[in-house]
Image (cartoon, rainbow, N blue to C red; front, top):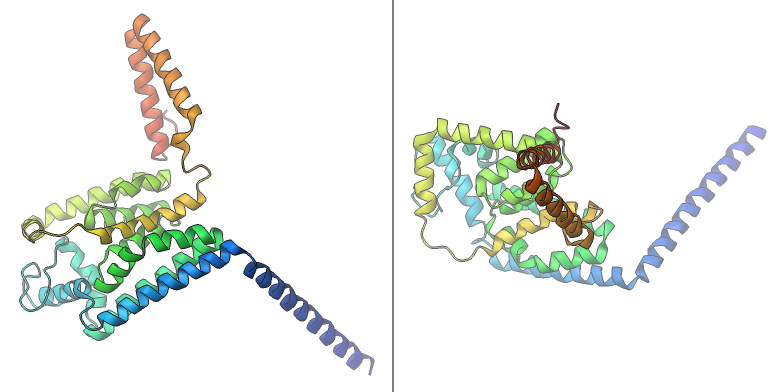
Length: 315
């Protein structure tokens, strides 16, 4: 009987602990609801989500023109055709020929399934990235999403790969050096617009990014005849409007901005004073010892470059 009473007592104690956890969680959520900044963030995200969702529903079947181009290009290529000059209601494929196999596992699906997977994956990754940013800075994240609402909605409508490139650049800031460099190089070789995001990578990832970009260039040279066809299709596509949908790449700056201890470090007055003093010291040494000044400048630049690429100090 004592063991039965002990068992019931332990069960009651467990229930009390569970109730305590629930009560603390409810109090925490109530306190959040009294936070005006968080309420404003929630309101903005609901409005933006409703706006984008309504746009996707209104578009219906005409949506996905860019994703359909990637899907059709793989199928035309597998059937021995020219994906850069497709026949039928398809936009031409304008990316490197060696990238076609990357689309193949997805493009082998029927179009309705492929489009569902493409857009659904984009929405899930968008939700994940917004949740990451919201947990750290709710109102700031909501404002950024609001500013980028049109580019995000445009990419979800057309199925352009630019949104996935933004997610690749986002993920590169959390991945190891080799994978991070590969993600940046792949995004850059595909569009070139992501090239400036090289500076937000970790130092060692920057070095790997240069290596992978060189590999991409070598592979493109190995497929030079098709690469020439690709460039002809790209530059012969005709006049295009201003690509506001490319602004979605700015979303990839959020992890760097949120985690950087001083994202506006280059605006600090002390930095410019240090640079001015360094220039004055170099100029004074140049007047007395030009070879020594050149050697010091060369050594300083080499050390800074190696540190920027995560290569450590020179021997």
